[in-house]
Length: 249
Ligand code: ADP
Image (tube, rainbow, N blue to C red):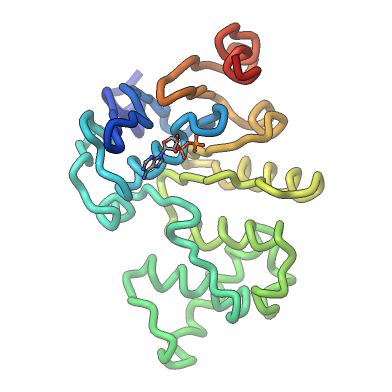
């Protein structure tokens, strides 16, 4: 396997919040092109890991490598520029705008045009074909002219994925993409993640084990800030320590 088998690696990552070690010596390896799921009970350190990866939070010690480059001390914007985007980070979705307008804002960001509401209609209209194609990819083409505020919750989450895709990221970090969804939306979003992961890497925090079982290539189980187990769903689901962590023992 090549030198860039792993698109993302952490080495002995530690985050200590004034004596409380939320992430404790985590060495994570995410294979390029994989769907990798981070799971674990509440308080396991999943969100803190995401915050460390996207540079929202600085590690106490340890290193983060993206495509072999040390990004430990880079700014969030530099990391985004390298092609690692987190869904909620990029996709502050504006409820008062239409679905199409929201995706166009994502595209403006991606093309380096700062987003200006006062840009001429002509400039914005030029982005329409690309925006509509993105909406089509996430099954939202029919909702293009709707106000975002009026979208059902599951569709809003799909829009979030569309605005993230506007950045054409190498790696997408998805924070509980199916949280709070009914069965139908869960199925739709799961299929969508699978589809948009083609040619990219996806790292997601996900609580729904059906989703994890159906799309994750690799699963890392965190508990109390450390990696408890790693492997396929079949492997981690029969791991004794994992079962105990979930039983709360
Ligand atoms: P998870 O996402 O797996 O539920 P978190 O990463 O949110 O876990 O939290 C892990 C632990 O770190 C929790 O006990 C939480 O209270 C603690 N923690 C998270 N952020 C902070 C912070 N800024 N200051 C102090 N403790 C924190």
